[in-house]
Image (cartoon, rainbow, N blue to C red):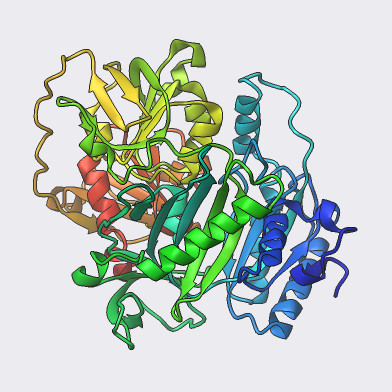
Length: 544
């Protein structure tokens, strides 16, 4: 079609070596008759591989993407990495390269393409490849180049991740996670969702999902608006949710759902049946998928299932497929989470801000907040990991399994309950933690105290003597990049920052916040306050 861009349906054997893992998986999905969103590929031999994109390349690529979107009637785009080393049978590179959402607008598409192309070279990739090579710094990385996949964004009613595999007795097994809207938080490990496990007594564990993310073509939606969203069977017009955050230029709206909708399962029987059929077909029919299938999926508001990513399952999720949650098997006197990566390890606790002082041989246990891929360099230094957020199919859990690190996820208030240098045993197979240094009988977790979140004027350096710091338990300062930098901010104990530029930081702890933002806190800020900010941050967004 153009000098750089080739529609997914036009890719033949001659181009196959240059389209990368994500595009290859979708081509295989098309052969099985799956619905795949319209897409096109910037093949790897036409993408700069040193992370240094030129304005000429960006303008040419952007023009072709916009022309393809216009011809294909695509009004919202997902621009994603598709490296040739990505989505392999042994290494997934889950979350290592970048992706970006955008409307088909010239400057926004250009920025999204640059974001993805520049991730071809990054410290995150280096850390992952060195860890996969046994922790040998400077070891030769796998030969691989980056292609870029351009897809239409599905207006998802629900979406998520699904793993499927066949046991030695021929029985098909599956683990499926889902949430309302786009499953961005689920995939990145910031939030959990509903969980289904096949087995003798299959069931769906339903979790509250109060925040849903949807693509929008409108630039007029504002925080405080109410929109109709489809997350209720039998309610043809959907339910009214309140917009609490708008992400520009990604073209995403964050919608707070009514309680009854948030607590309703998104994994209905028809959807589960479609997913199991798709997983079983891929596992049976596709070369390289015999060990299992890892699928990212989306269900539109007509109940149609779309496959947005298909790759071999590099490792099986931990735990048995008996339909029981790990809480049913947990011995008394343990902290219960969810199994993330199998295995057992006993070691001393280090939080993400302190583990840099240790080397892998010291056997430390990383205790962190959201299970985001950016924690990989810290994970490499650890022998096991405990995370307060995320599910067993999120990117960090997949990477922990690939690297052989026992992992327990979804441990509420993990960073408050587990302190530096405390000795614990992490059992990632069943998802429990035993505190060795204080016996097996645990004191009850600290009860959260009433707290309040305030917002300082964005892009203004705060005065430590400002009364706002006494009026609120924690104060949020938004730095958009168009005002002072993080380095100019004088730290205040209960001040937290919201920014898109965490790489500039030296004295702050970093957590992921919605849609590419990062929450920066002082290391001694109680985790309950960080959690309160993450819960309220989108509510306060309409004051920015």
